[in-house]
Image (cartoon, rainbow over all chains, first blue to last red; front, side):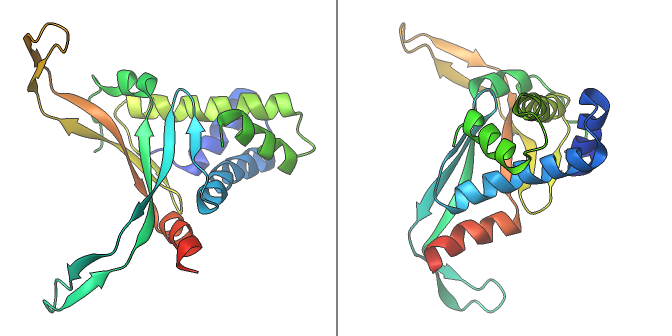
Length: 99
Length: 96
């Protein structure tokens, strides 16, 4: 089973004794703060885990796969994740359980 | 934004929780996320994205110092796929 926000809030409640309301809000705000930073064009660097970077993509030719029609893919900004060395070392020998 | 800045911003949002506790909580969440991937399990955060493991096939590498060929084993690497809301919000910021 994949880890969800509900599991994360439950973990804060069990491990740190935060009340359920605070635990749920904190998990929600944790992801919202990262979305806001990225939206503002700010890189997010979480040492020991990894960095969320922004990349500007130029317009490029594309095609509607259904109709075969040529349509340009507009210039856009995308988020990429670069795992840190510590996280990479921790998972390289892992066996996927549910991938 | 670094981890400590993220913690400060979250502490500002939750004034009734001591900032030390916010710090411990965020470190705990990141550790839980890393452990989940280490167990080979996925992380799915709606509106943010999902983390999973991708396989990298075994290959022949080279020791840059000696030029010697070395066999590299296959391994798993963390992969992040941004969710719809994150993709849209990051992109709208330049579209407008």
